[in-house]
Length: 64
Image 1: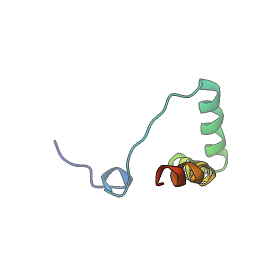
Image 2 (image 1 turned 180 degrees about the vertical axis):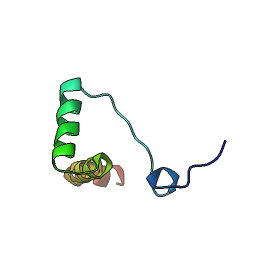
Image 3 (image 1 turned 135 degrees about the horizontal axis):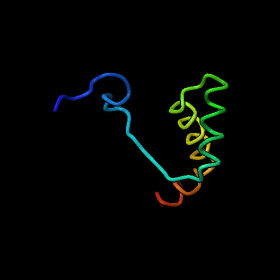
Image 4 (image 1 turned 45 degrees about the vertical axis):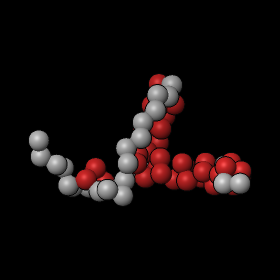
């Protein structure tokens, strides 16, 4: 089996994550990404970064 070294898939600085979400949300997400010509990975990275920033207090509590 050959290793895919192209793009994010072959970049050790990136990891694949996945989740099951309601179909309606997934379709809206894909539609908006297409309409705004935004890469889905880029949109997910942006949303997760914002979510993490809102949860910083959880990380602070864990490090105590």
